Length: 164
Image (cartoon, rainbow, N blue to C red; front, top):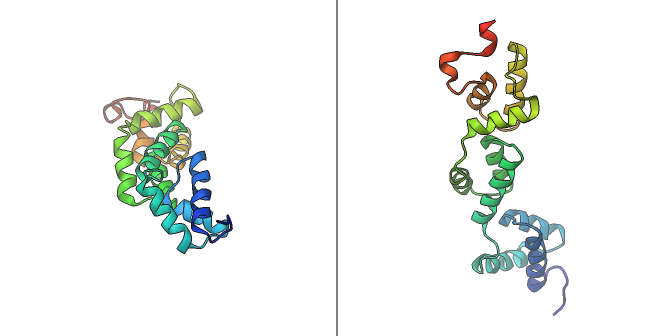
């Protein structure tokens, strides 16, 4: 058998090499195989076989992806968007985020403290700046608000700058 693009065993071998480096979604593998000159007609059956063997598992990809993005300090909105961009079905993305069992407000507080220090922001402008940073990282407005207020029970205490 030749190992030329367009050949199904070659597509399988190329996909296995990619999977050996890290988990991928099916769409990512199809795109990468297409870049290497494999037609979808040859790549799709190879990927089907890899999925049947458990070597290509999008649920496993989603779990690993969520874990890695949480460690990088990303929020749930950004993580979900990235998974969808990579071709992961929405239900699988939602399932992986739920399975992570993360307190997103606590995560937002930790990311804020890592970036800006332990002291709560002083002044309205600084609160807004830090909240915008957290929203760019993928936290919701509510999570960013809770993190920048610096209080566990922020509804009772109010923003730090309101006391001045």
